[in-house]
Image 1 (spheres, rainbow, N blue to C red):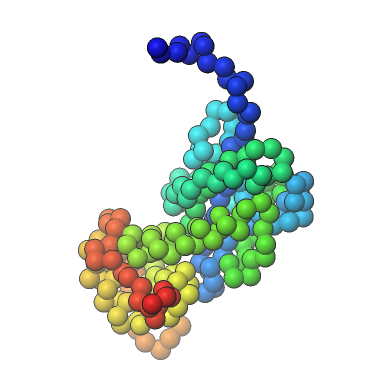
Image 2 (cartoon, helix red, strand yellow):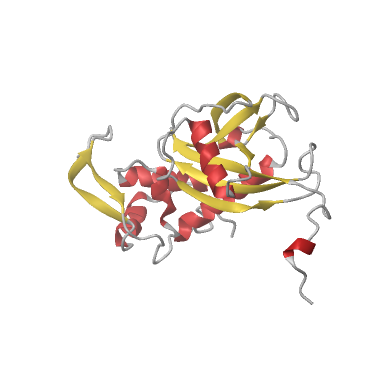
Length: 243
């Protein structure tokens, strides 16, 4: 027998809240950096955390994530930024206030602005990933999962260009891989693989950029039309992955 909607008791289960939390990553000055906010309220007042907030009744989790991303970065338009759902974190007790389920997202910024902490944040900063201290809630786990996800996807997806400005050199693209993977790559081999991968990058006709060396200016490229890498740009045991 099918039970009608009117027979459903919405008070049969304890209510819980949903948040959208963001691991916002960028590569600047040769370091992988993450956007963190200093909590201005309890719980964990004064402790650093990932930016995020509660999903409003009229929002989807992704809509809430984009709203929070705009608020914390000060950007008026975040529609062109890479934002992807990471996973859901629902362990009981992860938030001391009440049962809170977090839908976490990873966001990548190519040219990060000065952060603007939201109304409940005392401060906001871009911090080097390897200098991040223990975070509030379970945000250490969320951040580590985001780093692992991005590092893995660099092998088979054209994700690295999301860290780059609209026009970039192959050296800047290589720096993204080296920074996220935490290893040095052979320059000629990297260049050969990138240019041999259909749709990964496209040359910008007639454009070049001085790079500070004595050689000729470096050619500029932009993101191609491909979304996946064929063949994948795999890490070797010497390039950041255990044998």
